[in-house]
Length: 194
Image 1 (cartoon, helix red, strand yellow):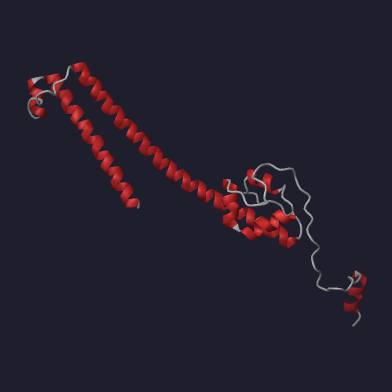
Image 2 (cartoon, one colour):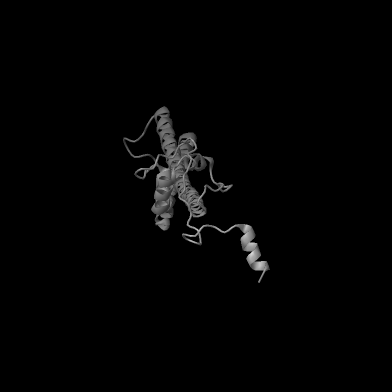
């Protein structure tokens, strides 16, 4: 696919160079009369002789078309590079968001945002409630990246600054399920008086 793009660009470039060479030869022919005609391959074909102003306009039109073609090709290449960079950036932000969500859910409290997370994602994530965080975590990084692009997940607000939400995380299960925690002094005395 990349080789095809290069071949296509080379073909277009060759067409532009050919058009420029023909224009240059025609210019020489116009400037030097008979000597120019000899250089350009003899006299013009019957019925193709144009006045100098018509020829100049035609030549200028060819040049403009060639310039526009080059500009369009450069823009297309820049767009492809931008699309690739944008996709990479979105995947990175989605990964950062997913990891932040995962850490917050595991800790049972909202964690500080990573320093490299973009402000747009921070201002959005801070406004999500517990159920929305769970849904995003389950959806995964690719779904978060799609949501960041505008392909909204059901039940999740669009990516925009949201007012900070008070997230109510469920209580974490303790290691001693069903037993009340022991006072610290009692635990210390168990280790000091053996």
